[in-house]
Length: 408
Image (cartoon, rainbow, N blue to C red; front, side, top):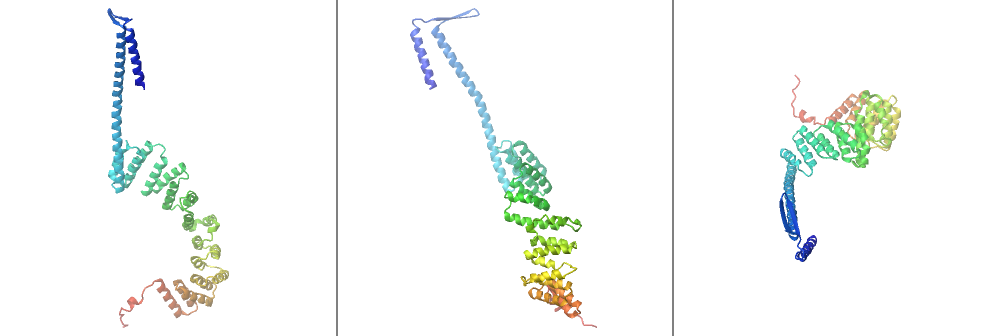
C-alpha cells in the first residue's frame, strides 16, 4: 500500500514538472567559493530526488550489514545451545548406565549454554557423589545455587539426599532442618527427616515429627499407628535403670489408649521389674490383661516377686475362666502358687501346662517344686525333660554308638 502511494506521488510530481517546465522552466544559481553553477529548476529537482533515493538505499544497505553481524552471532549461540542439549542428553544416558566420570564431564561442559543449568549441576553433583568426591559434589551444588534463583528447596533437597546416601546423617539432618524452616510442610522434607531420625535412632524427635507426617500425607493412618507403637517401645527400651523417675514420667505422656496395648506395656513392665518395682509392674500388667489378653504379658506377670502373692493368684484364677487353653497362664499360676507355698496346687497347674505345651520353664519349675518336697528322682526326670526341650538334640545320637570302657 505504501509503495502505491509513493508511486502515485512520483507520477503526480512528474506530470506537474512536464506541464510547467515549458512555460516556465525556472533556474537555480549555486555559488560556492568563486564557483557558479546554473541549472534549470526541473533538473535540480530531479537531481535532488535521485540523491534522496541513493541516500535511502545506502542506509538500508548499512542496516542490513549491521543486522547480518547479529544474525551470525545468533547462529553461533544457537549452535552452542544445540551442542549443550546434545551433551546433556548424553550425560543423562551415561548417568543411567553408571558411567559417572563421563556423565560428570558432559554435564559440566553443557552447563554454560544449557537451557536449564540447574539440572546440569545437580546431575553433575550426583555423578560426583557416586565417585566418592564429596568436595566436588558440594561445589556443583553451590554453582547450582549461584546460577539459579528461586530453587533453594530443590537444591537443598538434593544436597540432603546425597548426604543421606553417603551416610553423612548429621550433615543431612542439618540441611533438612534448614529446609524445614524454609518450607515447614514440604512432604519430601518431612519424609527425609523421618528417614534420618530412624538412622540416628533419635526416637523422641521422630515421635514429635509424627503428627506432621500424617497430616501432610507422608504416611497413612495405619502406618502412623504402627510407627507410633514402635517409637514408644524403642523409647522405653532406651531408658536405663539409673534414670530413676524418668521412665514413669514418660509413661504418663503416652496416650491412654496405648497404656493398655500389650506391645507397649510389656517392655515398660519389664523395665519396672528390672528396677524391682513389682507393685507398679503388677498394676500395669493387670490393667492391660483385663482389656487385651497377651501371652508375653501373662508370662511376665508370673515372674514378679510378690510379698503377698494371694491377690495376684486370685486375679490369675479369674483370667483362667476365659483362657483355659493358655499355657503361659497355667505356668504363671504354678509360679504364683509356689510363691504362696501351695505345692500341690502348683504341681497341678504346672502339669496342666505341660499337657498343653512342653515349655522348658514348666519342666524346670516342676523339677524345683519336686525337689523341695523331696521327690528327687521325679525331680531329676523333669529337669532332664526340660533340658531336652531347651537343647533339642538326640541324646542317643552319640551315646548309643559309643562303646564305653568297662570299669576296672
